[in-house]
Length: 217
Image (tube, rainbow, N blue to C red; front, side, top):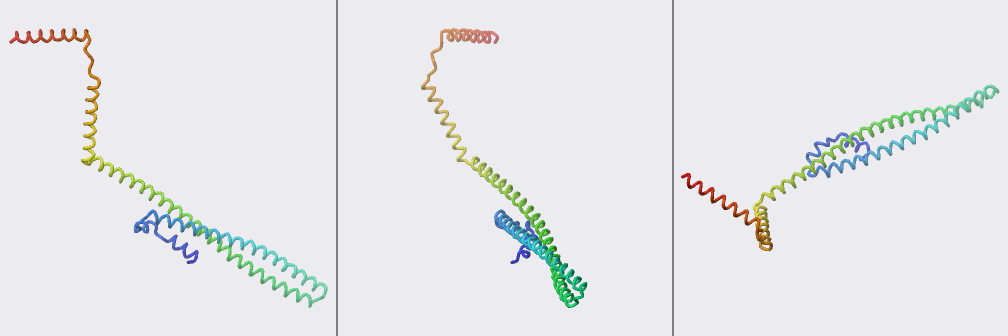
């Protein structure tokens, strides 16, 4: 497949439609971007080659143009000196170089058009590549979002299960057991003398209040 055929296939492709049909959109967009990048490199390399040929041909045309002028001057000199025979030979050489100059100018014109076409294609492909890279970025973000959502849903289902509730209940029972064991290891200290008198005073107040309730009946 030629570079221009491949280029046309790429720029005319509907990336969105192709990705919708793909089993692995991320993998496919990466392959498409790689192909675009490779084609872009080829286009730029070919364009650079044509530009180099243009410069080479321009130098050749200048050299031939110089020869054309030289033989024109020689023909004029021969006529001036009355050497029509030499003038005819000089004019033949002049015509030969004139034909070469015309051919070089036509080739330069064709190559210039080709360079312009290359530049247009390069710009078009760069725009297509930019769009593909944006689609790749969006696909990756969607993939990350979907993966995160899936992990969250799996976590919710995991902790909503009966086994998780059982584990929490067992943990709670274990904590209760540890607290009970701690109370046994560290029994409450004997109340102080002040605490005992305070309790007696409270008991007297309760008894007094109770007696008053009974009298009011």
